[in-house]
Image 1 (cartoon, helix red, strand yellow):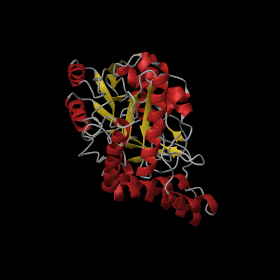
Image 2 (image 1 turned 180 degrees about the vertical axis):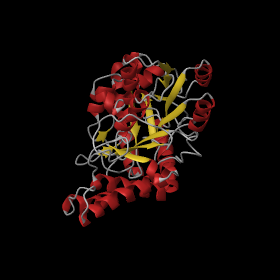
Image 3 (image 1 turned 90 degrees about the vertical axis):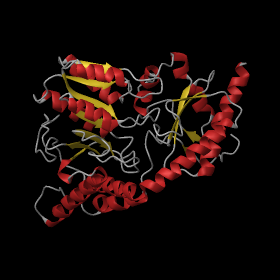
Image 4 (image 1 turned 180 degrees about the horizontal axis):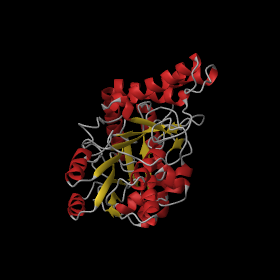
Length: 390
């Protein structure tokens, strides 16, 4: 592993999760160490815990340009997506079916399949070979009628495609459908104002641990005229979501959201510089490869993601051959279940190519020297395997 120190790891699995920011940990500490109060009790400590919840809600809302009351705290984006889809269709408001896309996160697609088993009409649309929405298929499906809700990602977690969310939402609304956006990979990295950037989306799902916040908390932003059936019932602490909230997790999420908002432009510039370096390092490594998804330096791709196919190199063997670098063969959720990437299959890759594809991702904490060393090590290991197979 030339260029890599043996006693440390370089993290290139930034789409799976991000390291907890020091500021987020500092915001969490009082509620982990000294204030254990239930935020719904009446005493002074509880009021302080409740204030932390509301301060976090305000920080999250500021990144979306919505009132804080629209933000429902959840355990993460998976719960938020489930609440959005199941809550809408099981609550009796929906008049029609669900329309979504083949490259959505597994928690959206599996929820869609669960709804289909309950009798909801579900349509899963194709995407282009670059991972962008097939707009002709989308317009035709909406024009056919019978769509109550559209669910579409803002940024794809495997190939980094940035979707035209505002246009998708406008078309959905023009045909009388609600619009839900899974923004877990975009929130805090790209502008996500619900009105200006997300087309007035009716529901938006978020995750804290994708923006250097803690795991175990996310949010669903819900427009005031949307009614959802709760996934579970109880005290109704979060309007459509019952259960005692965690002030510690909320404080960490709020701090992470504030850092993302204050540093978004600088973080984006850093990401673009790392993308250019990653492409330069790959090109110089003497390895055969293909990049999946939109142009890595174009406007339709987030500059923190590379999906790379190394022909003749099984991804699992490559990951094992470079233990000093943390990277994956696809979405962490699907990889953990042993399933091949449905996203890459939807782009048209055959099973062999899917099995030879890795995902490289970086964060605002990734340094240029680390990135160059890590990608060089991965590419050179892949080249050795290609040469041995020749």
